[in-house]
Structure formats: structure tokens, C-alpha cells
Image (cartoon, rainbow, N blue to C red; front, side):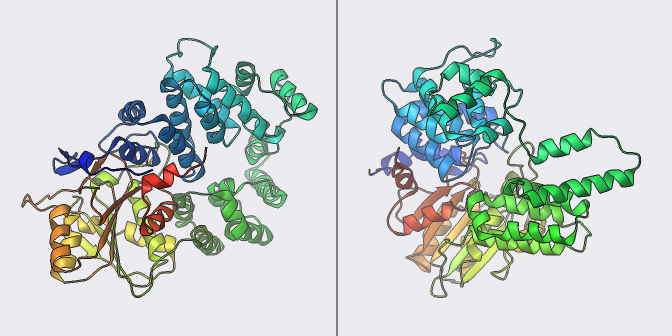
Length: 506
């Protein structure tokens, strides 16, 4: 499918800083809005406003694109909440075939997403006044019922929580058909609330926390023993392992167990299976920086090895290709990606730029705010490099003068092949001299590098672009996953971000 977006992107608008920008097509806007959405408040837009914008866009774009985007965000971008929102909102505007059923079934990848989807369905259909959901659209019902066949007793029991919508509610609402007698027995257990309590680290530590100990030393020994048991059992999942590295080190587990932890963290097979977003590694790394245990450095090294594995298939560029990596550290990027996260939008931009840095030989990398500063960094130490740049953000100021990156290249006559911006696209000129990224890019191509390509990595998704996206030299990619570089590679071969989504099989 081809997308002729030239006419639709000519409309000039103002961005959130009052600078000239261009309105995206509905498909492009929906794509950038959802792959950067945690549905939490951003600097210029609340989570509620983002959701309303997504809902309106779903009413405009064709249903098949929305369905494929939902699957893409779940299976390629590894997002969880947004795909459920897309599938539910799709059910409100599309009827008459099995598209919604297929989408719902695909986006439910964990047992708890059954109840999360239904809880959002309740919110989206104004049923909060009712104590229980009592009716679903037929295709949502079929999709959820089909998803029940994906999980075993351990997976159901792990997420069998007392929430607004429970697994038991979901079972009675959707009436899933068991594949065999064993699964029927499992469904009966859900209905009768007799699922076996799973062996999880949360349950184990919760049980330990309820016990009384004569002294703090005895409690500490018990905690240490419990962490050693959990580590040796192999039942501590990869995400749980990363989230608890601080706790494990503080418990002072034995060297044998630290070695197990390190080997699991850096295991190529474990990393690939875990499908972690890159910023998860950064969060774990940052939690360890201030710890003063002798084994902390070893674990940090293992995290570096792990993130290298996560981008092992990333195709970089050699010495014959000059790549510029410009990361936005302005004030609008200094916003947590979710209410519970310490990771900010500019952390993601810095990390993604360093992932690309690790795969390129001929690189100019740096940060911009009021000013642009290039900083020489080695290709190794992805997480360490990210933290180095993070600590420098204040020295370039907090405006979003992205044009200065291109201006510097032009004035120094640096002939770059690929220029990559990692930002929220809210670029402007705080000097009020009429400068813009668009003007500087045109001058740069005319005077220095006529064949240069500009890649805009949108990390927030406000639905605006600083240049016309119909240009053959400007490309927009969005998201927080290292999968964005797969899209970039596809673009190098003549594809586009939207084409990669429409290639998804339903």
C-alpha cells in the first residue's frame, strides 16, 4: 500500500512553542502518538488529552490500520497498555467482521492483560457506575475467550488478583471453550477460586515479611537466604531480576549467587527472550551506581553485556558513512515517561543515540538545548555513555534550538551522510532571530551536503513535525524500542514507518 502524504502535510501549524510546524497525516499522527504513549502526563499534553486525541484519530483512520498498529505496538514495540486501548477503541467504531476479535486475541500477551483490557473496556464504555461488567461487544468477547487458551495455571495464578475486573469475571463474561479436559479443569479452578498459589518472588517475600524475628540480624539472614533460594530456583524472571538487583546486593547474597545473577543478566538467550525495552537496562544500571558493594561493578558490567545483546542485530554504519547523533536535553524532555518511573524522555533519547553510537565507526554525537555541543565518546559502554551525557545536560541550556546542530555542521562544512535527532520535535529559536531546523537543513543541503538524510526520532508524539514529511530526504520514526532502528533500516531500502506497520499479518 502506498501513502501519498505530500498534499496532506503542506498545512502549516504552530507547535507548542509557537514555532512553525507541519500537521501529520492521521495515520502518522496515530502511529507517533501510541508508540510514545504511557498515557501519563507529558510536558505539553496530559495523559487524558493524549487519550482523547488517540480516540479521535481511530475514528478517522481505516480500521485495518488501527488493528495492525495495535499488533505492531504489542509484538514489535513490546508495549502493553496502549495495544489494549487500541483494540478496545477499535471495537467502538468497527463492526461486522472478525477484525476486532483477531486484534484482541493478538494483543493479549500475558494473563493479566485479559483483565486489564476488560477494565479499560469498562472505562471506555462508561460503565463505572456498575459494580461489574455485564456485557461485551461480540467480537471483544470472542477475542478474550480465545486468549484464555494461551495460558497455563501458573500464569493465571500469578495474576489472579483482587482488581476491578477479576479473572473469574472475565471467565463468566466470555465463556471460553476449553481445548481439552485438562484445560476445562483449569477453567473450573478459576471459577471456584481454587488456583494453586504460585511460587513467585512476590509471594515468597510477602510471606517472609509477615514473619516475626527476634533480632534484626536474624531477619537479615532470613532475607539473604530467601534471595539465594529465589536465585537458585530459576523462577525469578528476567524483569524481576533487573528490578531487584539493588535488593539482592543489599542482602549480601553469596558469591555463588551473584555469579548466577550475572550470568543470567548477560545470557544472550535470556536477553532475547525477555524482550526488554532499552530503558529498562538503564533503570537497573542507575539504581546500582551509588551502591558501595564490591560486586556492584561486576553486575553493572553484566548489564552492559546484556544491552549489547539486545542490539546485536542493529545495523550500523562504517567509516565511509558520517553519522551525526543529536539528543534533545531541553526542559520539555525532562519529564518522567510514567508516574512511577524515574526515567525521563531525554534519558530515552540519550540511550537510543548511544545504541546507534555503538554500531557506527564515523560519528559526531552530542546534546542540544540553548546550544549544541558535540562530545567524543567511545563506542563501548552504552549505559556508561548514556549516564555521562545525562550528567552534562545543564551545560547546554534548556531551550530546543535544534537548528544549531545543522548550523554548526554547515559553518564548519562537515559533510554528514545521516543526521539523527532524538527529541520531542518541539523545535524553535529561543534567540528570536527567525532560525529554524527547516531553513538550516535547506541551506546545509545546498551549501555542504546535497545527499544528506535527516532522521527525526519522535520520542513524545505530539502529532507535529518541524519539516514537511513528504520530502525524500526527511524521515520520521517514533518509539522507545530499539526496534525503531529496524524501521530505519527498512527506510534505507525504500520503505517507510507506515509501510512497516501495514506489513503486519493479522
